[in-house]
Image 1 (cartoon, rainbow, N blue to C red):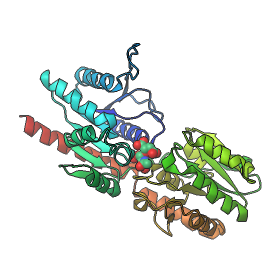
Image 2 (image 1 turned 135 degrees about the vertical axis):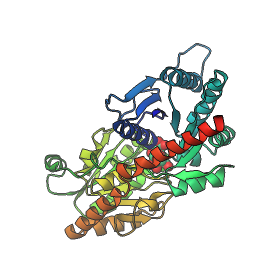
Image 3 (image 1 turned 45 degrees about the vertical axis):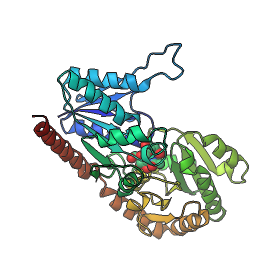
Image 4 (image 1 turned 90 degrees about the horizontal axis):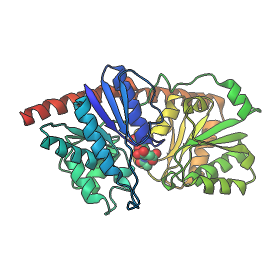
Length: 379
Ligand code: GMT
């Protein structure tokens, strides 16, 4: 099959998932064409993978260069020149409306192509339902030949906030368990925690929704009772505030802001506990990747997090903002070697239920169904 994938190429979860999906499909013999404005961060070379960059020419009149127009035109060119079978867009804004527009242009030229929209989270829960975007988002989701959501919670949220006339299939996110597994990086651990301190970590794009100050508050309480270090991985608008807050605290020397990192799997291999105190997560891919590396998770119970983090087994879930509860659970896990080991094993076991090998066939089946229906409708 020849598949076009459109996504955000940066460190956001939707781009990561789309890239992992494209790489997995290419390994199974599909030809995959990425259409993005920058090379996706996790994209590796494979003979079946092509990358088409969307460039947006500037012009003095353009205060806001028309990215969606450039994206649509690039989609049209790539589909025509490479005879793609279908388009799979990740994150509705503006990818679903661009796909709809590209399909209309191609129809005029006697060429038809179905598009699938995968909803990831903030495209629905934050940005999408804003009235600035809602009519276009609703229309272009409804026009999709298939719609998927990465969790049951996100599917329900979509039905709640938009007038969706079609079925939304839940296909959960997956993790590459060949890459995300525990590996021995003891030398790193010794450098970061020379006295055998416990290592806690947080990975995100440091947006408000991630509540990064809560990570620091939880750590402060843990650190008061258990010798420990905190690794803050990623970058974004809230990083500066978090660093400033950290500088006012006595245990600041135990916190390191590492910025964006590509070898997250290596860092997770030396981590004992993952903290994700988000206001909302449709899924929480970073937590799943941590679990696959044998790291239990302290998270909130918001959104789709209860669909991946199992209370008392792979970690604990607390109400949003309840840093006392999160710290209490963190201390409970970290204060006993045996208990920590049990949680680590359970995290790995549970993450396996979201392995790439289990989830990719669901997408392939969906593609087959869409193409079969599409041909019948078009004929
Ligand atoms: O918030 C992020 O981390 C980025 C955002 C995105 O769309 O790039 O992530 C969303 O999609 C991820 C992949 O499906 C999910 O794992 C995240 O939970 C989701 N983020 C939110 O819902 C806030």
